[in-house]
Length: 147
Length: 136
Image 1: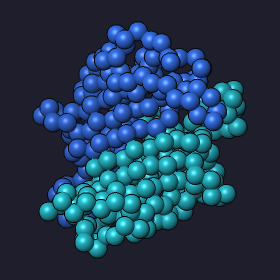
Image 2 (image 1 turned 90 degrees about the vertical axis):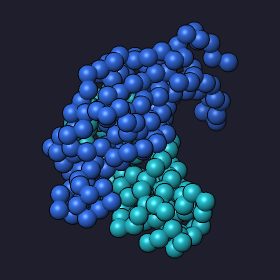
Image 3 (image 1 turned 90 degrees about the horizontal axis):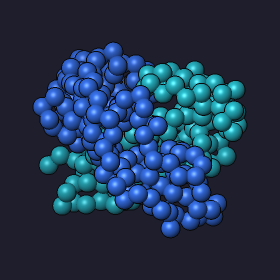
Image 4 (image 1 turned 120 degrees about the vertical axis):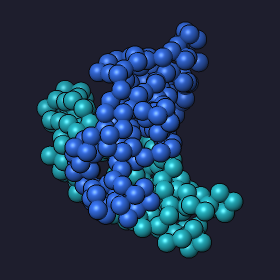
C-alpha cells in the first residue's frame, strides 16, 4: 500500500483573496465552450428562466483554483499527477457580481491496481462560497500518479 | 419535459461537436490554464503526448453542456456531475457526446444519467454520471 504522512490528509491549501465574477468572464467561458443557452448568454432570455437573471453555466465553477500554485501543492507519488476526473456537486449558480472564495484541502489518498499497473490517487476537495458565505459548489479533483 | 416524461433508457443527445485547436486554446486561456499541452503540439510532445489535448475541465464542460441542453426549458437543474478521464481527448476531431437515463427517483424527483464522450472510432474517452433534479 502507498505510504504517506497522515498529516497530509486535511492539509489546507493557500487561502486566496475572493475572485469577482464578471459578465465578461462568463461570456468568454461560454464562447470557448460553444455555449449558446440563453440562460447563460442572453440577459433578456435569462430573465424568463428559473433564476430570473443571467447565471454562469454550472461547469464555470470548476475553473476556480487556489492561486497560481494550486497544482504544485498537490502531493505527488512516483510519476505524473494527471487529472483523472472530478466529482462536482453544483449547489447554487454563480452570477455576475458574485465574489468567490475557495477552500481546498487534501481529502483522500488511496492506491488502486488496474490492468496498467498500480496507481496512487490524490483527491483534493475544493468548496466554493459566494460573498454571502453560501456554498456554490463542492469539487473533488482526482489526480492520478503512477508508481 | 417533465419528470414524469423521463424514463429509464431515455436518450440524451447525441451531439456531434467538432473541437478545433483554436477553440481548445481559447478555453485554456479563458480558464487560466497555460500548460503547453493545452496550447501547442510541440509543447505537448515534449510532455510525451501525441499532440495538444483538451483540458479535463473542458471535457467536463462539454458533458455538462449536453445535459443542460437536454433539460433546457424544463424545471430541472444539474446538481451533480462525476467524470473519469480515460483517454486524452485530442482537438481537431469530431466528438460525439451522449448518454441515457439509468435511474429515476420519484421521491426526490431526481434522475441519474450515464454520459460519455467518444471519438470517431466510438472509443469512450471520457465517461461520467450526472444527476438532474426537477423542482416540485
